[in-house]
Length: 237
View 1 (cartoon, rainbow, N blue to C red):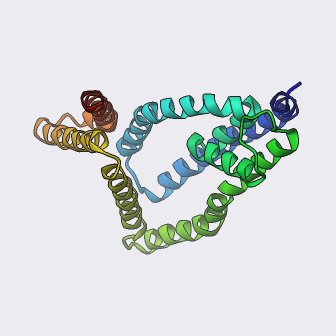
View 2: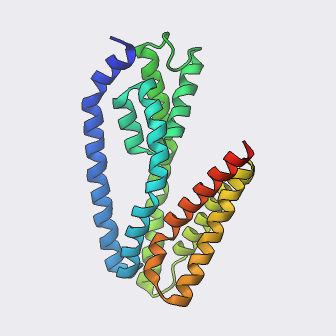
View 3: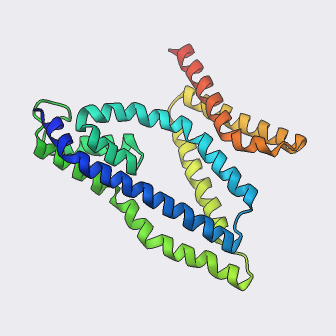
């Protein structure tokens, strides 16, 4: 039995337990978020429904890329380890990079015959520890943010947290956009087309009043951007 198969056999019970906990945790978060929104009226019911629709549509494109990289990760560290890590974090490329770094730290290439169960365990620890700062950040920041949002509401004042969330989103999207501009013409064309499609749909919604189309903006922009980026890449290849 290979090292990957041996480790996978031992990890599956823990993988099922962990993913079960994640499902319960997500359900608890959803219930708490809806209860908080009902109490403080942060979003209207239409905005909540729109957020659900937008999230459901926008997850389709990124999910395909995660699945493709996960297939590679399964071959290298096994299905159970991949299920545990990608099922919790969702960043398959990041997890693969962490596993590679852990293996190279002991002078072994991930996926080579020299891999042992001990090295695979080291890779798994590297993947877990690499994600630890995200969890620590949640422990340190979520409770103060919760208090910062609820106090102004109780006092009848405007909370700064929506502005902070918008600023963080703009910074994240801006950083990603800047990185794409450095990756060649196909990425630039995909980014520009996605932005143009988004603006055109928003203008159409504004004139027509068909607000239901707002839920599809991100999905449509993603598809159009990917199509144009692929066409440009094939033309210059």
